[in-house]
Length: 237
Image (cartoon, rainbow, N blue to C red):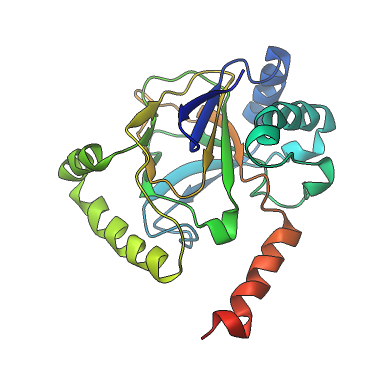
C-alpha cells in the first residue's frame, strides 16, 4: 500500500514487488559490468552539482516479467495521482525510464533537482538493498542551511543552478524535511522539482545501495516533443 509522506509530492511503499524478483535483479546486477559516472568527468545534464555512482549495464526493460510487476505496482499509485503507465509507453532503448545503479565508497549526490522539461513529472526509486547511510534527503530551509554549513562548496552550485531553472521556467522548491533510508524492496515516488541530495553509504563497498530507478513518462517520443516545443518560435521570444 502506498503512503503519502509529503502531500501531493512524495509517496512510499514497503514490499514493492515479490522478493524473488529482488533476488533475480540482484543476481544479474552483481554479474553485470558497470561504469562509474562522475560529475567531474560527465556532462552535467541535471545540474552543476557533483555526483558519483555506478551505472549497471543491465537493461531491465528487456525482462518483461519484472517490468510487468514494476509497472503494476507503480500504477496502483499513478492511477490515483496522474495517469497509468502503459507497456507501450516504455522505450527499450531509453535508459532514463528504467535504469539500475549502485554506489561505491566515493558515491554521493550533491543538492540538485531534475528538470521537468527533460525528465517529466515523476521519478521512482526502488531500493534493492538495506544500507547504513546513503539516505535520500529532502531538506527544508533550515536543514539545507545546516547542510551548506558542512558542505559550503555545494551552496554556490545550487544557487547558480536555481537561477538557471528560474530563467527556464522550471520548478524548483524545498519540500522537506524528510529523510528516506535505503531499505530492501521499498520504493519512493516523487514529483520532479523538489531539491534533494544523497548521503554517502557508511562503510561502503563497491556495488552497494542497489536501486532500480527512472523517470517512467520520459520516453523518446515525449522527449522529442519537449525539444520541438523548446525550439518553437513562441518559446524563443
